[in-house]
Amino acid sequence: MLRAAASCLGLCVGVLIGSAAAWAAVECPASLDGHPLERVSVFDGPPSDMVDLRPDGRGSTDVWADLDKNERPATLVCRYKSVSRTAAFVLPAGTRTCEGVRRADDTYRSIVCR
Image (cartoon, rainbow, N blue to C red):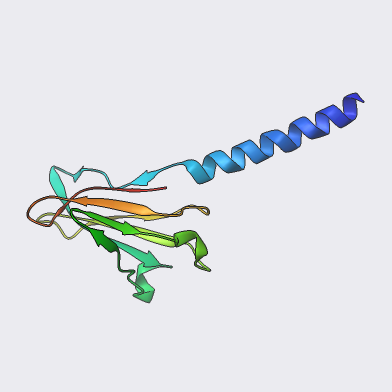
């Protein structure tokens, strides 16, 4: 009986840990070395493959949806004003959407992927 309970506990903890990883949000830092976030891209796979996904725009919000339906992980690339360096993140398995909020000048204020 104790062995069965221990097996169940191990399985339940594994499921919870896996689920927590899928729930972790990935977001662009608001600035890079003092330079504000300006543009973002979400790629199907690595950026070198140049499969830049187009968001659905809703006013000042852009949404990249159904990312978990792609066969390979999406990559979030954050670009900053007046610098060529970027921040890039391979999104974890289970990431479904990215939501970006734009300023009045069409640059991005933030983007969060979940």
